[in-house]
Length: 351
Image 1 (cartoon, one colour):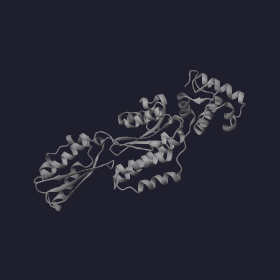
Image 2 (cartoon, rainbow, N blue to C red; image 1 turned 135 degrees about the vertical axis):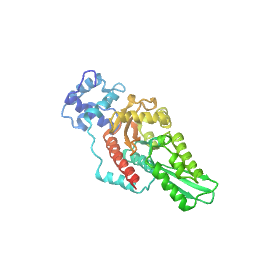
Image 3 (cartoon, helix red, strand yellow; image 1 turned 90 degrees about the vertical axis):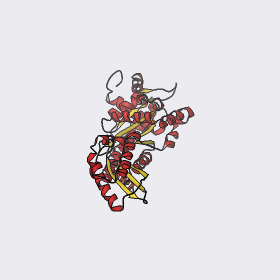
Image 4 (tube, rainbow, N blue to C red; image 1 turned 90 degrees about the horizontal axis):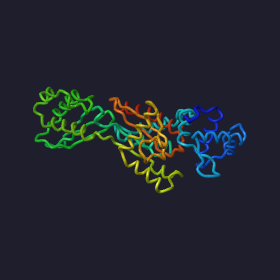
């Protein structure tokens, strides 16, 4: 809130009109334009008076003398929290997303990559998707296939659809029947376990039951351990980078460079999405301008939401654009896409 507390109805209307007009035009907004284009039932003089108060309270500002007004970060925050009422995505767009997911078979990485493209397409902003850290996902199943007498292909699939594989050489590969029995044994004992906790699983019985094939078992457990330890870093997908460069706010090379540097720093990018999402308290949250923890994004707004796997592991979906953002559209796209993504991942896990 501003220094003088809650805005009355007319000030809310004027602030909302300035935000909506500026989002549409990317030009400073005059009192006359508010009256003519945004349907405010008041004279231009009355609107000018309200704008002067909004400016004094920090909700709008004048970029230079004789110009109209622009929303400040505080103005956008009030608009998002107190005025905006995002609607649901249309049924047609939700079905379009479902069809995109239906075309993907048991490939979690491809689903997340498609999600990133969906967000960029539907919002017109740069989209970012963080997968949960692999070590926090559940092992869904193991598959093994003999290639010849001494080589095996081992596949690990997590509940997020991530596939980890390794081609291994052994002294003697089991025949197909023995390999099938061993695969079933491994899935009975290990499927459903969190990768980060596999070292705590009691394996003495497994070694006993797999007697005669300890070399193969060692290779499987080695791959599991490597996946849990080396793949702790979450995957990140980015789409629509050109979208942010096309915005008027980023035509200056120095401003565009700041955002591009931010997109390259995965740790800061994840932190920015996480903090924006936390503002939504489990739903869709928004980080506006100076609220963002990474300096590269101080001229941007980030709209983000968490999504979860059956394991309880969390990832993040987000879009990044100018503070002059269509917040309602971005929020409705993210909310609907999150629900449909979780639906697709659950369906994949059940197959």
